[in-house]
Length: 133
Image 1 (cartoon, rainbow, N blue to C red):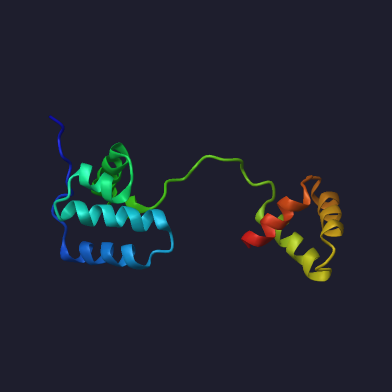
Image 2 (tube, helix red, strand yellow; image 1 turned 90 degrees about the horizontal axis):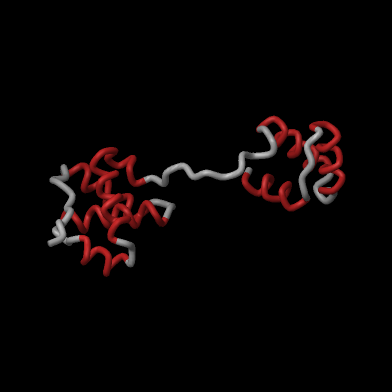
């Protein structure tokens, strides 16, 4: 027989915070986790949550465990691995300055940045860097 997992008692302020996250948080994953916690608190078991949210049972169980240990901070995405950024914040600022001088000449800015930093990248990488800032 499988064990059911439910969220333990929630304070009124925690419930209100979860409802606010569920309604307004800009990140879908956080909204979905908040909804899962609220439904679990109302008595929905993992199988019912799985059917409602279309999320694996083990994932739901991990969300509940993480919420119980970390509280509202447990709803946030965990850091993911990936390639470290090519450019430092100072180099990005230098790129912005170059682009501000000649907005339509990204290839010239790329060449000037390569000369100044010794780092090479493609134009698409520079566009992504500029878009993030």
